[in-house]
Length: 167
Ligand code: 16G
Image 1 (tube, rainbow, N blue to C red):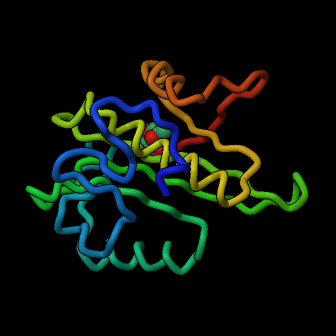
Image 2: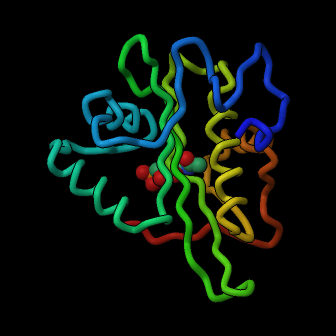
């Protein structure tokens, strides 16, 4: 509810009311037709994904229970998904059988930048992460986005490096 979110938004915006004609909610099966995958192409390669493939993956994620939370922002005047961010929760034995959360696949469509929608998405995910009892929430981002995420309380982890093998 509204008491979960900090009040530092301008122009009466909040996660519960992200803007005129805008609504923040979980991803739904119908979002294939509302341009969810097109939006993700603003972040990286998506590929040619059929409706069946989308639905198959959607229901697999749903079947995982409380591991995937994909939030979208819809422009109701256009039936279009214009923002998204995902929270992935990993169960752990460490930290007293806790969990850690990762913020993934954050995109706000070009035309909707500067409307505090990144903040809306991140506030929702950080709030969810706390509610799920995770001991930390982290993300990986490009150098030029570090300042963006710092605004929402993320900081470079001391003595930690992001390493990967790409295929
Ligand atoms: C960014 C994203 C990550 C996404 C990746 C895709 C955030 C905070 N980070 O690192 O979630 O999966 O880009 O890029 O949204 P890639 O295709 O190069 O892996």
